Length: 473
Image 1 (tube, helix red, strand yellow):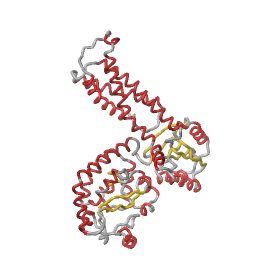
Image 2: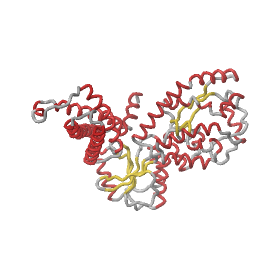
Image 3: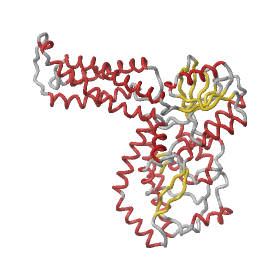
Image 4: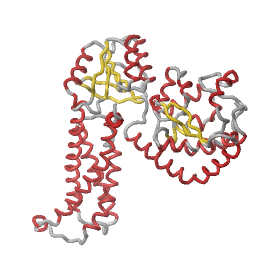
């Protein structure tokens, strides 16, 4: 497969996220257009004959006000849920547009009331409100049908498997097959979730040909239901089931309908849609700023690493990232050459018997300067490059080695639902001194309850954690 086709396929699998992102600049342009048309219409003869112009405001001055007001308008759109990737009817979307435009207009009217000299044309404000509803709706309608067109061409479809052999399963199967515009492609259907079905689904999951599992038959026994939930957790899949099935713990869930059948969707993490975009923007901005600001420290550390021991300045270590993807993690070298190869000889000295991780006090592979930079986590600064490349995040679960991830059990695989982080809940709650069970519990909580506020709290607590002395083991 050519590299460019592979990249296109990867992009199309994120079609919903891409369309959610493009709505922001399109909405902004639509609002600028609505305001401009309202301004121009105010000076048309058929309007001035009825209501003469009694203010003086050039278009340049008006546009400056409009540009700022449109940004505030977008904030109201965001609060109203207009940038959610949740699938909803266009009528529901139009209702949100109408409410959001009305609320934004009301806010602007109140703002101008307290500063009447800023802008005094009530007719332009009212016209802008009406035009904003019309133009934003038209823009959203175009995007809606373009997305439908992509789906009908087989691009960006969510790949699903249906479990069940009842009427619900048949109706959902028929609906997705007859209406590709819904955005789903059925990869397979199975009457039960037994061992044979599980093996088939594992093949699809490893080939990245599976996004959602739908349990259409609530009559399956509890063992199969629990196995299905665990399978979705391990493979970071969205889990949907008919609404009558209410015996499963709900964490991040949403209610929708397919062919009139109510479905509950359980997502592996709250980090989705615009949350994922915002987190990436914060990661990119802060990591680039960090690399620039810390460049003198990078230079000093690089010189000291080179002077105190033989070997390269940096090491690239294999780690497992989001969705089980392998990547190279960059660090300042803190160990002697061939340290990784010597690890097998030291396995008997592992002092972490409570999980898959390896830890050894007074590790003989550490260099004298390596002990210093390890103590203050300075060896991890090059991971800012991994953040820039999109392989890691500033905040997330600890990145682990492939052989460690192989030993993950059940729910531990939920840690692979998001990108690993330079810092995280486990790191600021005990660094490497936590028991494995406690570390998994903290990182799982983060995966399930992510928010930008939580990220900020963790980043603010990181310096204190770094400067706190570690336990010996």
